[in-house]
Image (tube, rainbow over all chains, first blue to last red; front, side, top):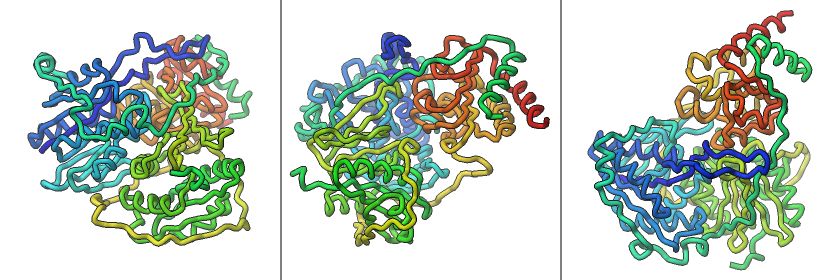
Length: 260
Length: 335
């Protein structure tokens, strides 16, 4: 069985702070990480590898530094890594990104295509389903469990607002996975050593099967008109005191606000 | 493509189990305002099985026309079946705008359609406006919520966006409001449908209400930590007749289910009272709760960013303060 997992390198948005004076983002020193939902998807793929001996390929689109998340994926247990990189891909919105990745995926054989539900920098959740459409694959999003039923079928659990659904899809298919569903494994020492001995394949546009007009900024139907920091609310009162007094203050404020 | 051929604002009127979802009515409300500016109509698309009776409700909340696609195949949401029907409607009627709720269904269907219709899609919008050039301006949070971006899709039609539930206001219901109901003939190529529903499992609802509809939320973060400590939050919530919610860290750790998560990747809430307990206040979290009327934050770290949005901040050990507060409140209420 062949599985391809799409991963993205993202700034750890938990570590981004706001300059309280200017209201702008402080991005200096913010670490880059493997997007959490993608890591959850990779973990699900690696569990299928443990169970069934699947071959796991990871692919990312990004600048040369994105090599780092692919090495991390190697250290976790991925077998093959592809970095899709080049200026033709730059400035892409979700549709152009999905066209680029689909172009690369057309040249690969796979039974399962796994993505994270969404990336923490953009939070759009769009690239997965858009890729599935370009590749004419069935899709299931918000997946928290994957079981291979037989050669042709996967049975998955999908979370939704009311609970969950159990669905079956014919392979090949696309699944987008939730980080909260699994605890990704740690990199092991042997894996880390190997990660730097393995080759990350770097692919440019010449290596993929896509109409160049659909890539990058010119292939993007949406354009950012402006980006701006959200206004800050003026901070309220803060007390540093012992628990007894703290409780007294809370009770008095709740009374003032007619909450109790 | 000639942009002038595309007219009217279409809303995907999401129903689940025969119940119109609140976000559908919110979108119809917003679409009414936008349609007035454009001099166009609001058209709701209602897909499902035995759902025709819901069409009048959509009209009473502001839809001028409802296109009903009613067929047994549409009883449960499956991406391909719904995508075929909505794309057929879009091909036939050429809407200038299509709005979806940013729900698990909307966020699954809309991107599939954007690729099928080769047009742009903007996710999780919190603001929609019409520009001087009569284009849709879609504003959404990015970078975990503190940066806002305004996005346009000027060269493609339809302009599509998903909109966060709870952000737009629905209109008051007008019981006698009139509109057009059109039945759309459903023709699905089942050979392309490769996903089937095996079982639908509803979560135990017990006495919990959706956190986005709660008046008081007791929300815990990393500083609360364990399941045992979360039980103390539940006790406090019970005394206040409140709901328990959480930050992403706690949900990711599996302490509390995802439907209780507040923030950019969870739900947007605006209760009358919000307790942020042991929540440092990552910007993703702030994005989901800063509109709350009154915010009380308790945290060990006096430099925690949560204090930038709280009305009352207490620096201290949340796991000591909460049991005390619960006891005091019990006494207050028994007076």
